[in-house]
Structures are given as C-alpha cells and as structure tokens.
Image (cartoon, rainbow, N blue to C red; front, side):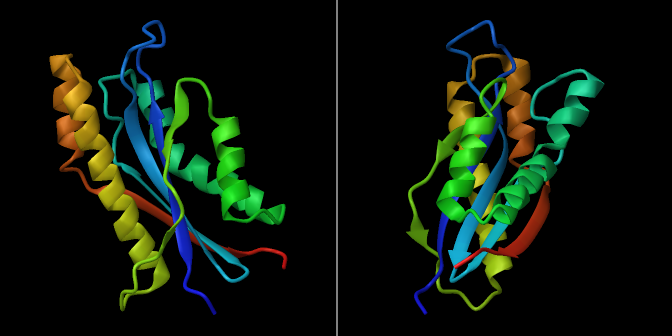
Length: 166
C-alpha cells in the first residue's frame, strides 16, 4: 500500500472587514491525510482567540476547530476524499472566517508514532509558522501582543478517522 499523503488548511479570521489590506489572524490548522480508503484529520487551534474581542466573538472563534472537524466529517460521510473535502471547506468559509492557505499534497513523514500523532505534530508546527508569518505583517501593538501570546499557548486537538467509498 502506498504511504499516506496529507494536505493542510490554515483557517483564519479578519478582525477588520472594512480594511481590504488588514491581515488575517490564524485560528487553527487542519491536517487531512488519506490512507487507502480512510481519511484522517486533525484540527489544532489556539486555546483562545488571538485578538482582543468581545466574549461572544471569542466563544464563536474558539469553536472553529470543532466546526471544521464537524464539516469534514460531514464531507467524509458524503464519500468525499481528502481533496474534495478541503475544496468544500474552502467554498463554505469565505467571510471573516476563511481558509487563508491550503498546502500542496505531501507524503506523511515516516515516523514511529501513530498517524494521528504525526498529523497533530504537523498541524501544531504549521500553526506556529502561520502565527510567526502573521506577526511580521501586524502593525497594531495590542494585536501583535495577542498573536505573540498564541505562539506560546497550548493547542486544542481534535482528531478523527473515517472510511470513504472505494
């Protein structure tokens, strides 16, 4: 059997929809792998919203990793594979919360851990990279401080595996 392949999607939000040049803030990274007839996914998100926002917005943004996981499970239930599931996610998130990046398909690194552990590590690494890249773009001091804290915060982890049709 060929080794599993994976892709990643960075889910972000834009705190200022009035400014077309405002940077997006990463919320979570979804790593999806296809292994034979199974689709595996792990969503890793920041433990709190990265920007100073009101409590309701913070609660909604904090639910994004769960929402993304539920969306992909629903897509897998419809017998979609990795690429079709990511395409459906990109199409469904287009406003303040959106997919800001989708990586190319890559082979899963050959490690001694379970696939879910490897996908979690890949997601956490990508999320730290997305925060670091965002820091370079931010001019707002308060927003910069919030994003900087996210680099050091523990991450939430949601993983699942689902069979798809042949």
